[in-house]
Length: 496
Image (cartoon, rainbow, N blue to C red; front, side, top):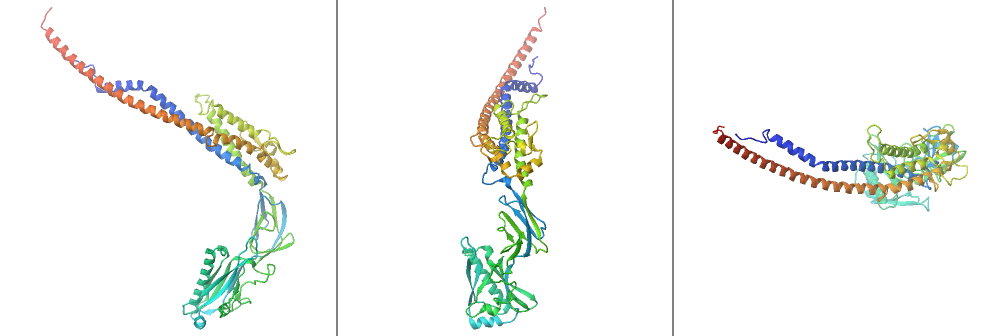
């Protein structure tokens, strides 16, 4: 009878081939491990680059010698319902008395009241034809704060009723203003608007209203040849009353007697302004008037310790994040002995050491008497190198004595921010340390991918070779089995 050296079946052959391939693929697995380690390191460096870039941006902010971020000021009002205030860093610290006597208002003119269905205006145009009038609007320039521009309005309405014709006049005014804006004759917020209102059923008026408040932006109207504006009574020099037209608020003849202007007292002096947003009374302070005072209120300008501290905290947070990240990825786990992606790399251990030195060391070149260390303004380092505010009083006192007490620590020639920027730029710039490292690793990973691909091709060929050899061995085994059976049959007739 025949015999089969593969009597256990094809599955045994598959297992034998799989075992053989696994042994021969050990170098490939090592390549995969090395590739995985490179990818981990590449990801860690990418994350580090993001953190260092964030820290670099904040450091650059504090190297700006033109903007003193430590001189931020805040302004507060004793009654925010009457006025609010904001302060720039150029504002001087102090307390100010404020009394708001009047708010600024837009110039508004109204026509006489008409019967909406009446035909008086139709008769006027039938008699006099097309009419052109002019409206002068304020358009201050850098060289002439009193500059005005004249806008011409031509109307030749086709409507039958007073209401129809007033709407056509209003549309002509609005179109003329829009055209002036398009032509850059005036700014968009300087144009006046015209509309028709209905005080009661069947009664209509026209309204002209300036977009901006104040005497500067008052309307000055020049009538048409046949006195259309006088017919409308919209250019009356009297205040509107009853059904008559005229002004709503007295325009006056100057900034000081015009009721269009805001009027307020600051520290006992009286000021008149076109707008309720006023930024030219106290340097660096913008006031927004909201209501009329009954008593004198107080406005306080002081150092904005909160915003300065919050801004500086961003820098500390970014620094702490870098320090913790470097520490975590440079350690060797004492239990598992697993090494961080940056463990043993002197480039990044140097970075961590250098960062700690910059933030905790002495800043040279500081003016005598000013703080030379962060701990002198209430920022101290923990044992792990991270920084935090631990002395708020020290920080507030340093700012109160002048922003340079703090800013010199950061933006002086040897200041913290400048040293940080110079150090980190070597790491995060294009072609810098991290960029070169990640590019090098990317090249290595590509090379490994190609080697792994070639390995896979060889293993595929090796598998085919093994299957062919095992098939041949099966044939030989089958042949030998047949010969053995024949021999056994032949010899069975012999007796010894």
